[in-house]
Length: 140
Image (cartoon, rainbow, N blue to C red; front, side):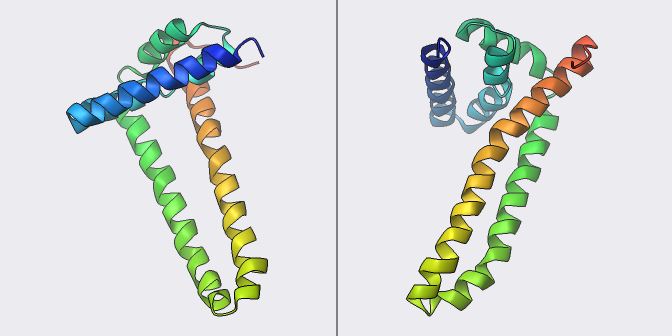
């Protein structure tokens, strides 16, 4: 619980910086988003403060942001493909309100839950991968 307030502050800072980066120009927002991808795992796993985690993420992602962009594009494509593959099921049960409630809604909730967990998992694995590549650290 001692990390809750700093975690909220870090999320707010990242969100505001990405928002203003997208608002001013699109490219700075993308750069900030991918540069701070590892900030939350760094904060939680290395017991850093918000500013130290921010700096650590910038340092780890330097020269790897294009690769991170590709990873997130692949993840987004996976999400799109899964949602498209679920459309025939929702179309079949869409004509019957009871079937939609019993099958379609739980199916979409499970898909959303899976992808809600996928984001933090990807960023954590990315954090470990960058640590191993940049610092030759073995993961215990």
